[in-house]
Each structure stands twice: as structure tokens, then as C-alpha cells.
Image (cartoon, rainbow, N blue to C red; front, side, top):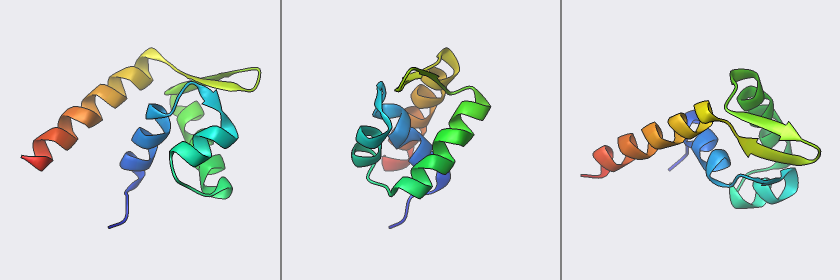
Length: 76
């Protein structure tokens, strides 16, 4: 089963804070796809970068909480 973009972003957010390469391994994705989703998450204000580390913003925390709630509803 393939993940949609919302699940991929959720997996990335769950792996924060960390370096880009460690996020890549934790989220189980290739580097090119990670680059795309990191850029998208930065643009949408879900994450921010400080030096080489990526961190979750308040908006990112809300996104993650909402996605986890939705995923739990789907599993019931």
C-alpha cells in the first residue's frame, strides 16, 4: 500500500527534530522525494530550519495531532 502525500508529511514531522539524512531514513524515503516534501513543509510553515536541523512549528504540531486523530478514526 502506498502512502499519500499527507501520510508522507506526517512521517517526516514525526521524525523531527533531526538532520535531513536521518529524517530520510526515519521516514523511509529517497533523498529526491525528501527534498520535495521538506521544501513543501517549509513553504507551508509546518517546519523550520535552524543550522542543519529541522524543527516542528506550532502549525506542524497541529497538523501532526490532526493526522494522528484521523488515522486512528480510519483504523476503527
